[in-house]
Image (cartoon, chains in turn green, brown, red, purple):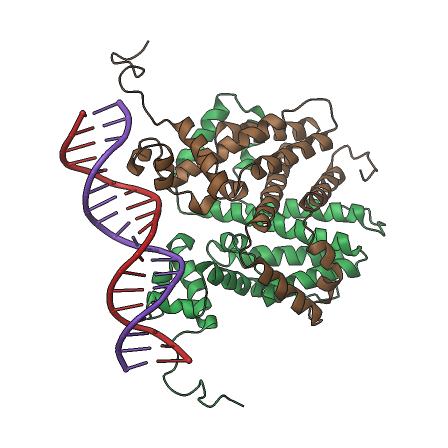
Length: 229
Length: 229
DNA sequence: ACCTGAACACCGTTCAAGT
DNA sequence: ACCTGAACACCGTTCAAGT
């Protein structure tokens, strides 16, 4: 069943897609996206940079594979359980996506920067869409709700991870904000400053998620619910 | 009122922040973010690359200034008018943000990649927060709603502009999707494929926005409304 | 078949020196 | 004061040549 010269014979290949993606994700966690270069990755794998191009046509290709690998966590964590209410199931998918992106440094940036259409991403999307369809949403609303939820989640996590970043003039930025606010230029920002500058990102995320879910309840074909969670 | 050697005398400076930002945004529109380099920008301004560092400490600094400039459009377009219902006012802010980001090639990527805290960004945020507070939302909810709306909008527009990009193996991607779907692996994606692959991004955006607004209505202190828009 | 070595065409950023 | 020239320490990607 193997070709004449079996690929398992001869020098064992140092490189393969799976191992390269895992090493790249490790490097991402250690050094961040800006420091993830093809040369550094090649170094980490004991190989010359050019060798990586045997498995990935471009760096963007590699990042796409990394994004899909991350989504594996999300897809596993959110496997539909048929038990909960559709809104709680949907929330689990959104939370699993955020958690998966938070699982790697700059994870949201990697995911947002690629159009991942790998098996994990598709599985995640298929399962979430299934939850909504089985809840009775029409096909087009299920598709659009999928987009709304994932786009909100990536948008939020992008912000969250940017805010967590090593101090890149972050102090100076807060300074500008406080000064402008103190000057009375932005009265509404001044009034809401404690919440705006809060680092409880889970609370921010849960609020936005709740808005989306409440919105979905409102448009649900059998909208017989009345509770606000 | 001017220092001894007035800055308006002598060689007229070829460089200043405002003109540099405008030229950079033009270059962005022509060539995209990946082609926007400090050297190319310097060329466009008839200057050596190093000269740019007199006005911007880093490239990221320049991108932040570009992001705030773009938000000027959004802040102007959404100036509160005191006339409409708070939900319609809020929708105007979200739409103005999307439109402003769509106004420049890779606009969402520039905005999402920077923590803009310039005057335009703050004005936009202050005005939107004001609409929500005057509608009766408590301060913390107004702040969180601001985040939910802007994060959804950037997340959506990021996707939208990525999808509009010149064909970067986009055909191959659609191929993979259709094959996987035809193989019956993703039944729910198959059922929703027409909507999922629709390029009517305005419809996608409006649906997500409606979910958020309906969600806000649900949690509104004086929730006496019942209509679904 | 798989990888090396070396090159090509670039980057962002710094800084002495010129005017 | 403002900008040049030139360098430093890198990039992604390609491809003949080795093993």
